[in-house]
Image (cartoon, rainbow, N blue to C red; front, side, top):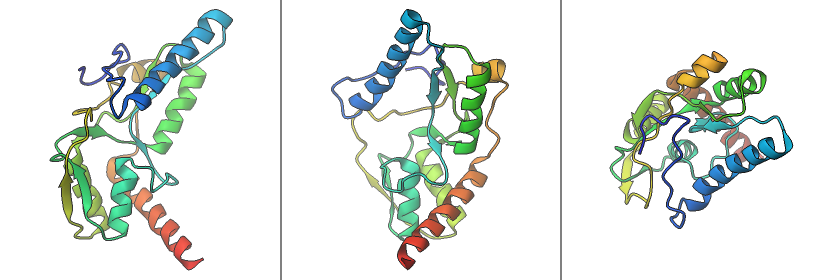
Length: 192
């Protein structure tokens, strides 16, 4: 497996594993777009998005950011899968939107990574959310799912060079804004 992942990396997918549909769907979408470009000369962009988070994400969608935030706000233990040593990189939604707009305006039709190259373990990430919230939420562990990526971080050198893009919002700022939104969302739901 390539780490950090460049645009030239084609992936390592278990097509019949629990993540198979998700992983293959992304590859299929890229292949479909490139076929339309090649055959029908459609102007396309292929953006590879890495772990985006921010306000207005569904708090029950199963991804790590909304799951941890929901657990913290409900005063439930934060659930790590495995020992939490797997790594991810988290990109705030406004940075991603800026990157997509830049790709539309300045990009070409080959893949471009958009994500935050700052990498941390899932355990460190859980602790960061807990610190920002100011609570003492417990952290529990469950077995690691089959085919869960051990490390995931984008190489954004191409985005920097081609688009002049890189993320601006640091993780603490982004998590503070996301937690604030989630608290307001949940309190708005409970008052109705």
